[in-house]
Length: 344
Length: 174
Image (cartoon, rainbow over the protein chains, first blue to last red):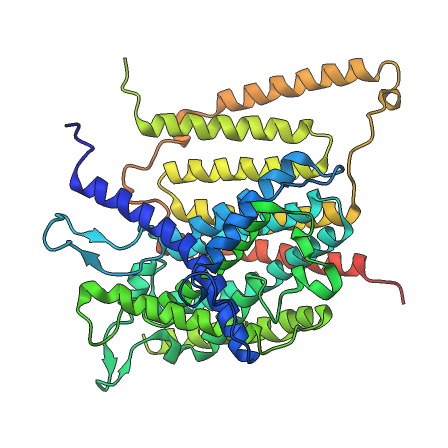
């Protein structure tokens, strides 16, 4: 047997495969949750025909999309038109690879050394997430430009402007947490949040950085183009925005990317502010259940917000981003820095 | 025969991608394609930084250049809506212009080769006193704010001046 086939390598491959499929499945689940929550908020029932409570509805939708004809505008830039959704999905799926979602497991003593529940541990992990999500913009911008359609172009432009504007506040909120933790590795940031104050309040950074958490999540919503900041695809103005000209599965890929990005932002927020996999009652190796619960709660909030808040106007979005969110983020950063130095 | 390590293969792959993509940037008629190829080139450079055990530099390269600056480039290209560059007009150079240009280019290339050959390889060799990743974030930070504090501050003032200048130029006349 070759040396590279050993339990550790196999376990890693299985983990990578599992994470990727979980991400894709989670986006299917998110579509279902979105439709269900939306339905109940609007006093309807929502999908309930395919599978139990409509759980298989997203799969039916995907099969429908796969069987549809793939259309491309005649004047489109063919190469960029094809590659744009691929960039979006690749960036969305890759960003999750550095997020730890549990401590190490030995699988009842089968694995030695124990397997850490994350695809890879990079010592600049949080920056990697930041870098890869910023690559996701290209998918949207290229889709908008290459379609050669005015709605797509406007959607792409809006998305680019929005993402640049909110990325700064997003980065500054991240920097505050990094200063508190003294590390860029997500695993270390989570480990720094273990323990309790007065045996009661968990040492999560959300309690030290309530403002930072708000800034991070607001900017995250804007980054993922979700309501109330969903201007790149504002239906009433832009038909469907950057993916107006897309059909069949390439449209599906944009959809997938959007939901995976939501999962990633929620997972990063969980790691940075909500103590990641740390939580009471469960043994250490089941910490990933806490991670799931926290991420799911944030995702629910995402959906809840979409069906509660109306969309802003575009100039309001820009004004909010540059004139309010950014100054608040800077003040938060300066205060955090001062306190970190003062209290050691 | 030297052992072909994975490291070496990765180095040549990234280097080849960087060089080819950079060459193609210049060759494109469509500015949008040029921008995309430049991003590919930046990505390959970032890969080289990882191979140099400098993950922080690699990620910064992606965030700053490929993530922020190139999005601005794309933005400008999209707003200008410049689909293709016009055909080049050689007449502008005049009848002898091309010949002069060729001579000058050869001279420039010669100078470049001469300049590079003068750099002794010792400049690039790693400092034996340094162990561990060269780009530990703490070390970069301490370096910037102590040894290179002056250069750092001057750069920030330069950027500020450029920003003010851009605002003044872009401002509408009252």
